[in-house]
Image (cartoon, rainbow, N blue to C red; front, side):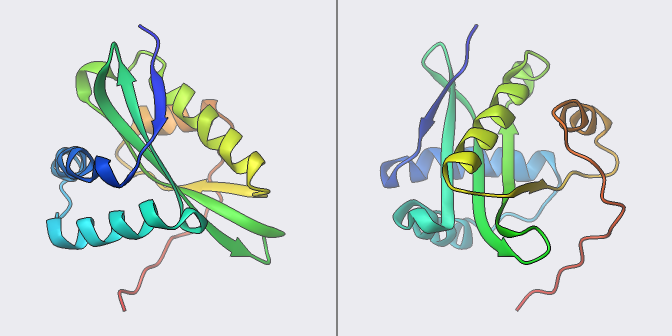
Length: 148
């Protein structure tokens, strides 16, 4: 079973909302469909914000990955985040995550990105193992956030 990654478009919003709802429930995050719809519309209509790719296995959509772009002096210019990465549970542990991270790196190289970041829950040991195996390191910092 070889996954395929396809760039999402504005016509993918309903599918993405369904997947986001699953992901947020899995991560026990609050899901606001209207806010998610607005954010999806922005990124899907402005390439400079990032890219979303749907993940297919045997023509079935099984997840998505979102790469967003930023800028950092510390990281020498453009940087990016794997903002969201979701694979439905029955498809995990089959190498799809590794291939998704390889796609993210390829996109970043094409976009002149110097550093790729991601965040993972401290309890999610399985995802941490995948990310470390792919070359991500713990910067021993805390990500602090203030909603505006």
